[in-house]
Length: 184
Image (cartoon, rainbow, N blue to C red):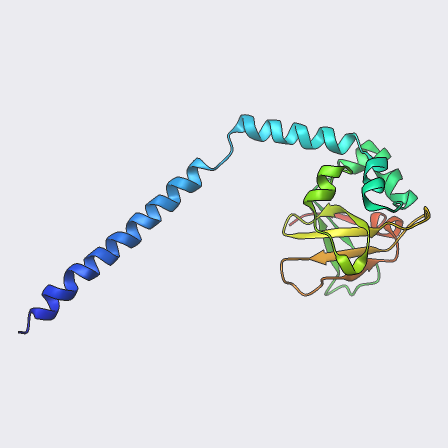
């Protein structure tokens, strides 16, 4: 009688341990198989770069039903500026001990593909996510009925840090002219 629980629950516990081990091995194999090869990464990067350097503002504006700010269009005309990646911008006037920094992983291509893949905020209206932090957050700028010189930069935070919808800078020009620091 004393060994009955061991005979009944022992094989069940053993089976549960085997199931956990098998599941872990399966996940590891799937993770290794799903990694892109060096050639696939190269093709993806070349496609991204081609899209980035060949903006399609007319198509995006037509799809949005609004006009993007002049400053955003000038950004995409500056081929060296639009290729900048992996930096953070430090907002002037923030305290020395707690500076406000905004990470920019890369700029998004100005095309229909990006427009369809990037987040859309119904309450903000038409606009475009022109840059990403690389961590589930983007920098957004509004489109309007008439072409404006510039527009505020809004932070769309989908990683849960609580800054969603925050106005980062009063204008894109101001945002792009903040001091740049390397990413940490």
